[in-house]
Length: 152
Image 1 (tube, rainbow, N blue to C red):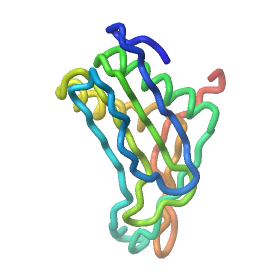
Image 2: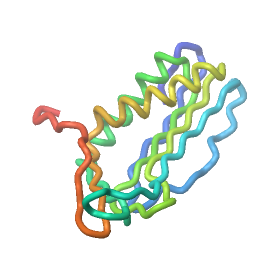
Image 3: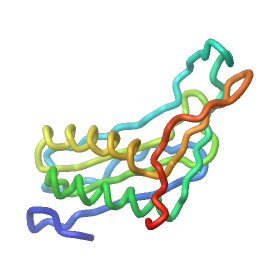
């Protein structure tokens, strides 16, 4: 545990899981006045060239992804005064309606909790070496992901 801006210790839960992410409620934290959860699911969509989406497939440089996820969590905790941060991301196949990412934060106030969740998701997509392949009925496409820095 690390310390946040207050004297309350920061709790982190950072994981990569094989297959879809399962929702779990955040723990009760007595000083927490604002709790926010974001669960990102695979949505049904059609590609004009490849037809309907069947599933998403995630690949990652695991050790680097975990290190960057923890760094994001600690940065958000410091910036927004968070007491708890959970980031769980899928690796492997995630079908329509299944979840690929869970971000949960507990802070002292609601506004900071909302802002932190959005900030974590935005930075996760830009910085973490997790790549998404979309598998369609007739083909596959890759979404842009974070560039792996050789020195990391």
